[in-house]
Length: 235
Image (cartoon, rainbow, N blue to C red):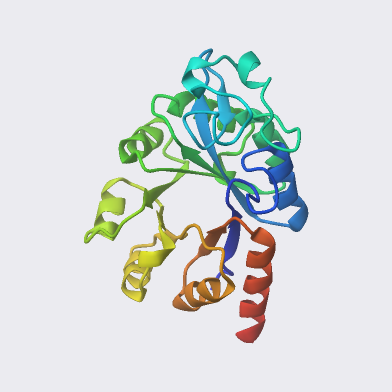
């Protein structure tokens, strides 16, 4: 059985300003095998890493990402002097070092996102996830080789069959409704399970014991320690 992985949520959001190069470097320096990030498109067509549709919460600026140019976005402080990074900057940093889970927060950017991934020969190192499930179909249509994961924030009776219909490779559910039944059904159908966002040690251990394939967390340092303890306890 493959050891479960820790995925750094928005880099290492509990340790550094989320979705910044500092946050991603923090995760990298911890030895995290995969980071998760969110992307939006600027007014002038650049893909940038930011969770919200506006800059208000995570920067000292005001406005919607889609209504601002990259130059305007770069004027804002995203925390500790960090700027909002471009997707390609993060891919370049992660290349040959760790994998990247790209969450699409907007539609219509699938091709430009995939072009950035393919040009860096990172198709096997990227997982694309979204709550906009149709965008995952589009992603697969553009490049069937890219891994996709369906994000769920509430229970769904046909969770596994629905994911299979989308042609996706993984299920990324809110951790609170993950069950043994879901995990077993997913694994029977060769799907991975990566619950989010788990920041409590006991909850991490419970999910690992249930058999999840990885955990998305704001505190990858804690997650790595828990996975190590869990793996040692099995031998």
